[in-house]
Image: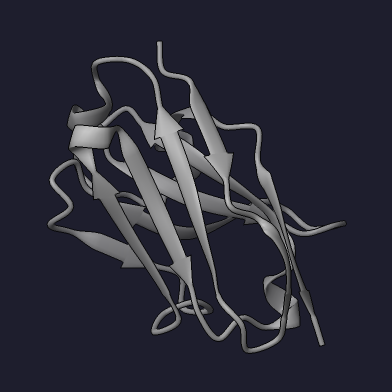
Length: 124
């Protein structure tokens, strides 16, 4: 069993930055790939970024490539999402997720555990 707790969301102006954190409980964190997803009001949940168990492989949605960076610290059981040059269209609830697998994946069905989400609001 893995429990995930996100933090770091908030209200920021367009062009600003936020850093999301996700702390995981359980001993299997370091063997799992991790991902960030987001869901805006009235829209389906979508992939944002993923990182392999070692941190050696990362994937990003085209909409955030070059602006967001995913990283992890296995010693702290924590995954991060650094978000720069934020845009109003980045406004959403951001979810951290832990996958079945060690390889990074954008496939939502591969993710077994989910956090409760943290709200990110970008004002124009």
